Length: 242
Image 1 (cartoon, helix red, strand yellow):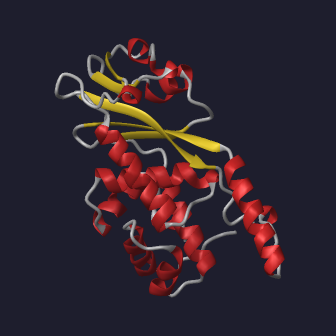
Image 2 (cartoon, rainbow, N blue to C red):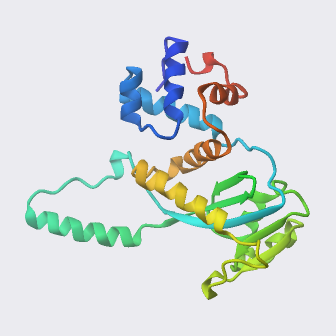
Image 3 (tube, rainbow, N blue to C red):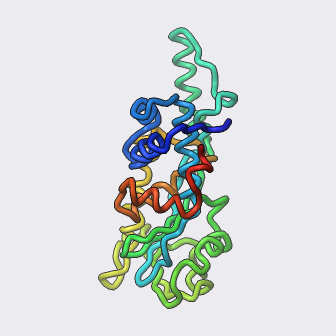
């Protein structure tokens, strides 16, 4: 479905809603557009940010994975019809608990440095090969990479020509040599989960990488309409969305 924006001013107005603090319905009301148009505008804008990178990580970098439950939010074909009656509600709640326990977990890698540069990616699985493919050339050679003790991390720093600092979190090791830790990346995980699972009430897994890119932009830049337009103008002019 194509998205029609009749005035540049309307697009400028919608960009205000990309501040990370406005959900789809308030954005639609603010801009005087339908919810469907609000959805498509947001996703077109997120697509432009999805693969943007903002420089290499350097100095002391941290890497760790977090997990999101697989979600088909918004896909009506995969939603279970609502049941009526108290007994049905009890069964539905019980089934929902069982379903949640069996929902696949989607791994998300996040790496960052102490200068707030961020690299992230939705992974198929947590493996040395996949982590290497996501980080190759994106951390300055000679930097130090801090991570938790994990089989996938064992030879990662060596493959990336980095100095490794491994923390055994399961044994309570939080800081090594006074400065090496993964607290920065874990704080980012917490912030990301509050934003996606709390503020947005979850997002469909197929769109997760787009939200990662949007969050990465917001974390790396002080949000402003002018700055956002400058960033997306690298990829696309107004006529591409009109």
